[in-house]
Picture 1 (cartoon, rainbow, N blue to C red):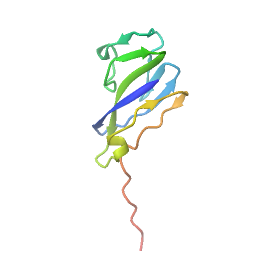
Picture 2 (picture 1 turned 180 degrees about the vertical axis):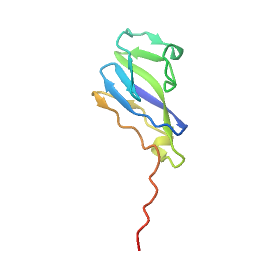
Picture 3 (picture 1 turned 180 degrees about the horizontal axis):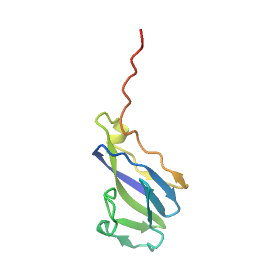
Picture 4 (picture 1 turned 90 degrees about the vertical axis):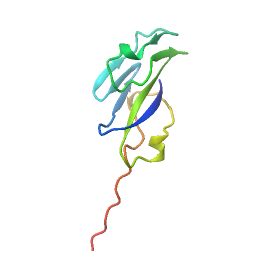
Length: 107
């Protein structure tokens, strides 16, 4: 599965989990298994505001773009994210939502 991202400033965060050709986005499962080689599923046909593109199967791989939410202090890796090539099932590691505020030392 190939995922690219469209970074967007928003308060809600994103969680992803891959299981074969299914992608769970914030707890909602989207199963792209029926998508045949060379087919494209229009973005409008998928009821998710997280999807930022059509979904295609090219060379046996599902390819799509997702909205990547970020906070006001997002690091460069989040503002300019690298595409992900998912080859295993399980939780998907995403770029940091925001840079944690520095901890103040107690006197």
